[in-house]
Image 1 (cartoon, one colour):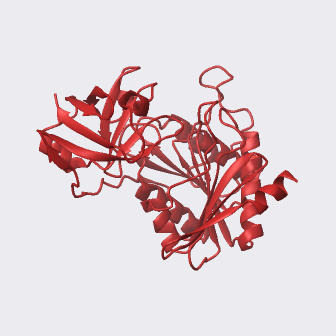
Image 2 (cartoon, rainbow, N blue to C red; image 1 turned 60 degrees about the vertical axis):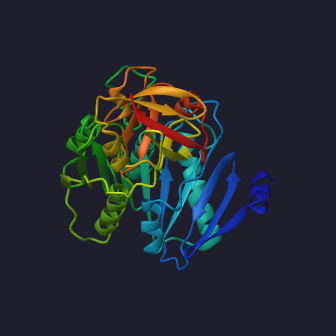
Length: 345
């Protein structure tokens, strides 16, 4: 009855020039499916990483970012699930992904090819799926895969791992966290696991285009085409024009996204805005939303001390505000659509 109610209550909207976006809920897990105007039978399933317990479940993804639009334009469908709860969830998440794929089949038919994109904890989930925990997935792309077990001592790998993938596995991994992917590749064999290093620091600090390239490479691999098993997968940040407004010696931009899980703030500020203000890595800037705070210009949030705020350029070329082990949106007092002012201290 719960499933029937979710299906009957499913909402659908239309994407301009693309197709349909549908949302619903299965066994407590929220989901979103985006399809192109003409589906070619290829599907990407998204397995997200760890989210703090207590937050609202969110199955949405940005259907207008460069990853999604790149796939939709090529005839791919994309589907994501919130999982049935937040926190450390692996086995139930696999069930939720099975349910998600079944929902795609129910609405649109059996995919000709399915690729799973998993990040962080989702990388562990994707690895287990590659090893046979779920049928109907033909290859996986793992971004910043965490293959450990937080309930066990540091350095121990998740006990269910067999190191025997049945489908192609491609790791997209930042230069600062290569240990788990390298260990998995060494155990399995370099011919069965591809490792594309992203030469920037951080955790899952990978751009939309880099993710897109990974999915398309695994798709080629599934087709039997030659794919580089080890390479530099880094794509430079695009040069984006500034849309900021000058006002009293500062620049005014807008908040484009606030992470519901972590409180990170994405903006429409770009590299040219940092250059205009003379801001370089290591400098201190002043940010103002409803509240005013000082932030350090960093390469990534991991450069910050616990509780400190920072601003950095994402791989996709946008300015982001973060607090290491804190909530930037609350500290700034902003929500999506609000203005934010930035100036050099």
